[in-house]
Length: 129
Image 1 (cartoon, rainbow, N blue to C red):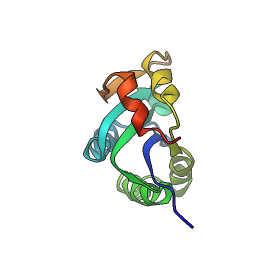
Image 2: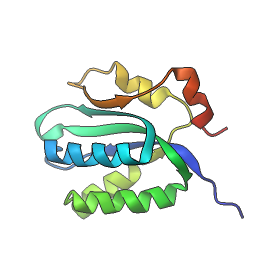
Image 3: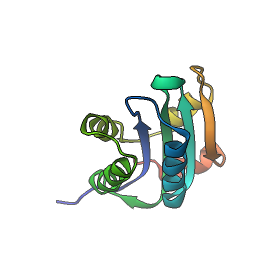
Image 4: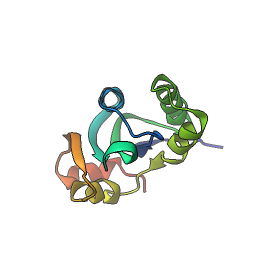
């Protein structure tokens, strides 16, 4: 049986006490290293602050392989088991640009941390059929 590989993923990082600026930098650097295109935002403030990102990977991977690397990142962020569980469930395959566009104009104290997106039509080739 063939294992499906994907190049487009959405992630959510939601530590219990809010994501710190240092954690945001680590996650953003991790995303930039692996992605051709990306869009990273934080949402809310204080204890509710968390991070959302859309990633267009340089190399397609299975969800399970990306999850393994993402969990390693979560452990380096000192996330606890319940926070790692949220990280696991927050890793989703993006089938279109809705996730990214949803966070381009969203309220909730949304702050764009890093973005490198081409014309929307250029992204179509990254999405799975």
